[in-house]
Image (cartoon, helix red, strand yellow):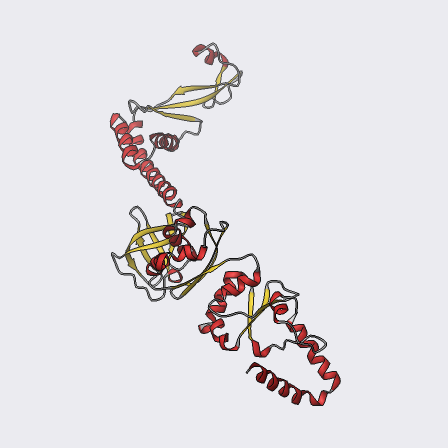
Length: 401
């Protein structure tokens, strides 16, 4: 070993950012193993690498004892004090045992171990660099794709995007520049692995943060996001500042801010709705653009509710293939059952008309009212129930007209 090794370590540190001290520590540990393996030695040894001159010294570490049993591991107090009067029983003494031909073995070992440590250090550097991008947006270049993944090059590492993370209708061609959301960074055995997505709701959140300064600085808060990637997204926003309209802020002048997000998502529809603490109003907002007459919560399950809408808004509230209702449920965290107004009888136990305001405020349990009314009819005239129901429906239809 020589100064060339020192120069190589310096170059390694400057070019790849691998600390010289880390490589030297790993090298010394490997040389200890190499010495024991090549010279059939089992005693404790210590290898020191001179970081200035590149020289290597091997020392046998022996314990100072009164009576020596194994001279490979022990040294007498008398012999130890010949080197230094300060040695006492229990101390450890180092004796140089560097073989004459150890340089050749050291060079071979150093090459193998340094390459291994360099690879490990590079993996750690890459992991530490990209782990800070977890849950952030990053731009890369599409390298290739197969039946499982799209592979995206970020420069020092190649990320993977699974089928579930790919936007429906999007095609990813080689050399395309795309922006993706980093969902996870793993320090796997074979090296760091980065997983990215174009379908994660976090992508929408980060895009709005980039377009809306008020979200980035905390003036406007994104409370929840419900997304069916490639088709439609609902986002609930609020602001503690009464002078700030959270929805208008996110939409931007003439819709420029929300349109920028829509363009990035290739035309995905985005509904921005105001969040309110009152769950009734929040659920009504989440079902926008449908009109909501009343929201009734289940007594046994407070996260389940019945939403009553006008008959002519039923399909609008449910949405195409149930999408609007499904997204509203995800956005609010409630299980929502939507019913048209014509299927709800607004009467109390005494067959008195119920104020619609009481229904909207949740004072009236609609399902219990219907059940009580039906039971009362059965008790009075079971045989006439069918005809009375028809008459009631006709009367209801006439009154509505």
